[in-house]
Length: 405
Image 1 (cartoon, rainbow, N blue to C red):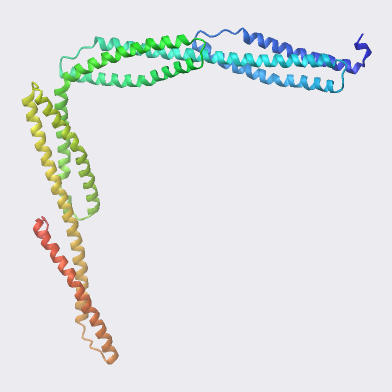
Image 2 (image 1 turned 90 degrees about the vertical axis):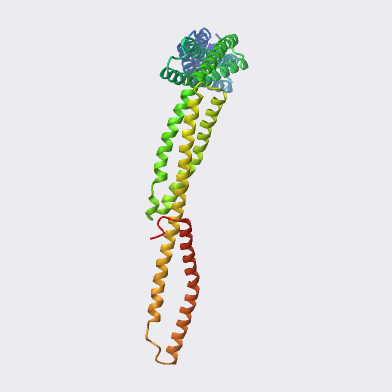
C-alpha cells in the first residue's frame, strides 16, 4: 500500500536498487563464507597454491568493488532526490559497506595466515634438506678410514677438503633457516614453536658433524704431512726449471723491442719476488718437521737443500739477465748517439772542406758568422764526445759481452 501511494518511477528505481544491492550482498556473503572456511595447508605445494588462489580472490573482490560503487552511486542519487525509501536505502548502503569492510579484513587476515603457512612449509622443507645432507655426511665421515697408501691418503684428503667446502656452503642455508625462524618469532607466527624446535634439532646435528670433521681433518693432516711436502718440492722444482729457461736465454743480444723485453723481465722479476714467500713457506715447513723429529727428516733435509740450491741459482741467473738487459739498453742508446754524432761530424767536415772564402765583404762576413756557429757547435759537442767515452769505459768495467762490437 505504501508503494501504491508513490509514483511508478520511484517504485521501479527502488526495485532496481534492491536487486543490485542484493546481488552485491549475496556475492560478498558467499565470498566471505568461502574464504572463512578455507583450511591451512599441510604441505608446501598446497600452501603455494593457497597464496596464489588468495591473490586471485583478492583480485575478484577488488573487481567487484565497482559493483558496490555503482549501487552506492545509485543509492546516493535516490537519497538526493528525497526518495520515499531513503531510510531503507541508507540502511542498505551501510550494510553493504560494512560487508565490504568485513570482507577486506578477512582477506587481510587470511593473507597473513596463508603467507605464514607458506613460510612455515618453506622453512620445514629447507630444514629437512639441511638435516638430510648433514646426516648423510655424518654417516660417511664416521665410516671412512685414513687410507693405507699415498694414493689413498691424497684421495681422502681431497674428498675431505671438498666436504669442508660443502659444509661451508651449507652455512648459507643454515643462516637462512635461522633468519626465517627469527622473522617468525618477531611476526608472532601462529606456530612459532615449530620453528624454534626444528632449528634446535638441525643445529645439534650440525655441531656433531663439525666435531667429526675436525677430528678427521687432524688425522688426515698427520698422515699427509710428508707427502704434501714432497709434492710441493717437486712442483716448485718444476716451476724453477721453467723460469730458468727464461732467465738464461740471451734475448738481450737482439736490440729490437728492448723496452718490451725490459717490461717482460720486470714482470718476471715481480713474479719471482712474490713466489719467494712460497719458497720460504716450504723451507719453514721442512724445518718444523725436522725439529719435531719427523721419521723422514734425513730425506726432508736432502730435498730442502736441493730446492734451496736451485732457487739461489735461478735468482743469480735472473740478476745477470736484468743486468744484461740494462746494459743492452745503454749500448743501444750509445749506438744511436754515436750514429747521430757521426752524421753531425760529416756535416762539419763538409763545411770545413768548402773552398769558398767569399767574393766580397758581405759574403766574407756571412762565412765568418757561420764559422763562429760551427766552432761553437764543435765546442758544445765536445761534451757529447766525453759522455760517449765514459759510456764505453762503463761497458768495459761491467764486462758487457757485446762491448767488443
